[in-house]
Image (tube, rainbow, N blue to C red; front, top):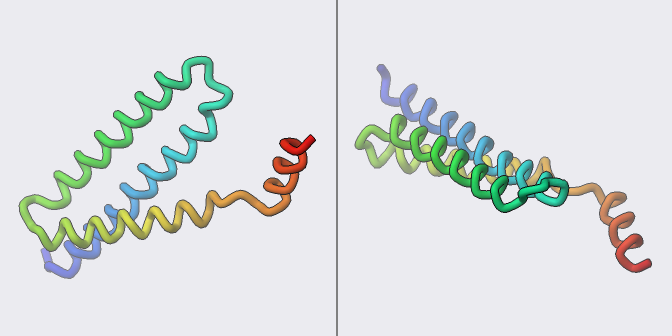
Length: 102
């Protein structure tokens, strides 16, 4: 397979792994307040997210440091994308601040 195609696939996989990891973290934190067992939820989510991410990196990298770097770049970019999409709206923040001040 062409090396450029492999690098593009490594980048896309890094984006997918980062989205899964940080999106899963966001969902976990969002559900913590309503969970009956928040510690178990957090620990289970952490183990699942970390396991999937490590296995994904293992299969993509295959001993190539270039693929590792490209995959990590995609992973970090996914963090910024997830952060951007999960940022609370200003109206929600105002409602929360008003309720806290009451």
